[in-house]
Length: 101
Image (cartoon, rainbow, N blue to C red):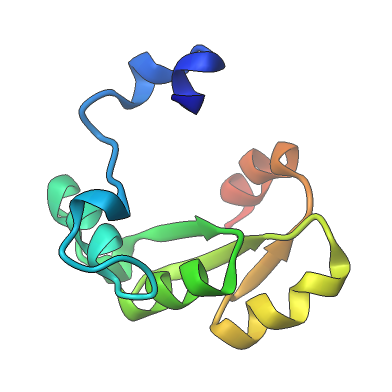
């Protein structure tokens, strides 16, 4: 629904994975493993962007590198403790971070 509202659905249609469709939801890694399998990639070759400790835990359990979107500094500790390898506070910064990685 959110992708349609911002005009991005065409970019993602057929490639959307939700915990509601998985046998187990986060913190289980099922949703990330399903997305990786759809792409023909190992979890270890994937980057997960998350904003909750539960989501970070799921991404790490899938074997992915996890970066955490963290606009509020006070939330950073919990995200790092859950296994995020990088914090960033503005989504607009993500393309530059990807290019530099």
